Length: 141
Image 1 (cartoon, rainbow, N blue to C red):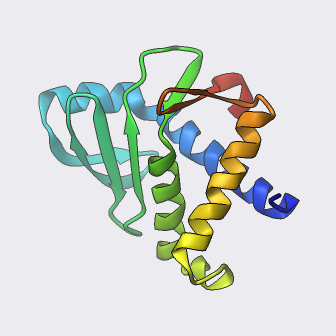
Image 2 (image 1 turned 135 degrees about the horizontal axis):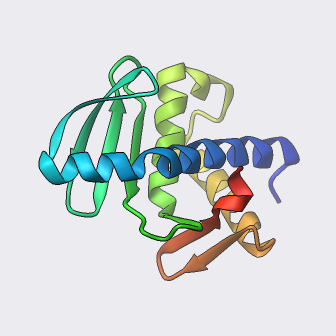
Image 3 (image 1 turned 90 degrees about the horizontal axis):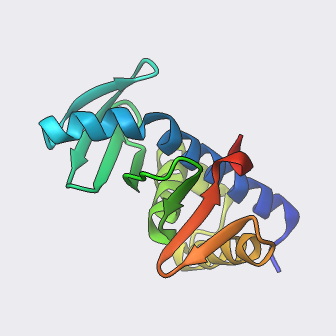
């Protein structure tokens, strides 16, 4: 069982991650149709993006914080993959230097992330469908 502080922090990361996706995926999808990579400014921050038909990776040019997600066409839900949210957390921990306050063992940290995600799935806040996790947008606002 994950302690409450860890679960809350994981939830904060999940909300940040899904809010970014929710806010910007349409603009990014349109831009990525025209050009598969380039620079983009989102809320006054400069990012580089790299895209395929359904995926995009954003990299913050100042901090190197990386965010990868799937373009989602459902209006009420956001689909995400476990590996992408966990890579986002690891990227933030590395860019901010916060990993020093956690176990230096990445395998242990990934185990904690998995436990947190499993708890949110078992509580019904997040649904699992095949390899996807689904969160209703109402949960993140």
